[in-house]
Image (cartoon, rainbow, N blue to C red):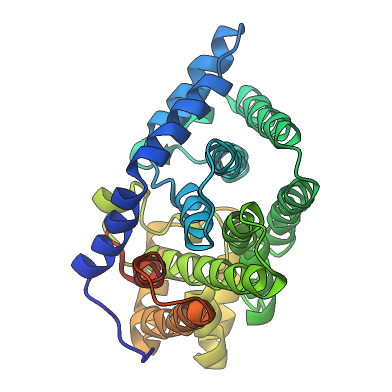
Length: 337
């Protein structure tokens, strides 16, 4: 696969094609999640419903279902159950992330913590994880249980690692990749490998799908970090510069530190050390981002992982299922929602 960036319309079509292919199953996943989150405690149900109804692409669930289909899984229920598990892990981490980041908006809607407070949001996130682990135990596959439970631990480690390096303008690119590998790519990889485990695939196929998911997740997060410096809020439902104002050092800022002169590096360091950053600070950083074209170089890095992800599926026969999953790699790079 060459380094070709497809247009956004094509990228969105790749996601919609996967969603349409699995429409019945993804609807069953939604129904199951709603069923599993019912509670005698009204506030839990109200908060979880609000969080889940705020939208979301259900991409990780689709990856679980799509990988299972690619590898020949044709039974009932288990793929639905485990796709719901993957999605619940993701939803729980978002609830926790919003508390840590003090976020007010997610996907254009008020976050649960901004409505009901941090304590309730943390506990409801824990509730989602607990329900997920109940479902995994009911499934009974020890390999998948170990995979998803260890992935939950990796996500938490990534969150702590990011906090540990908050505001570090001289963050190493290797450390940044480690953070997003833990926080984001690990769940993508677990989703795709779970599909292969469902089908009792051989180790080569499991590793191929795990690599596909991991590199797709890396590309997805790197592109997302680039979008933070130029995307439109109406598409992405978050304030532009959100990462910057929260003190998160991502690849566009790392690239400035790599390319900038001593004065610019010192200025970036001072800005990121601040307790609160201002709009003026953000505009100054945007000037440096434009000067060194760090959004473009960030997308180039994401493009590399897109290509690795695409090529990871080469071992599978050429089918529509494979084509759709390979085409999906462009969505991580060029999506408009």
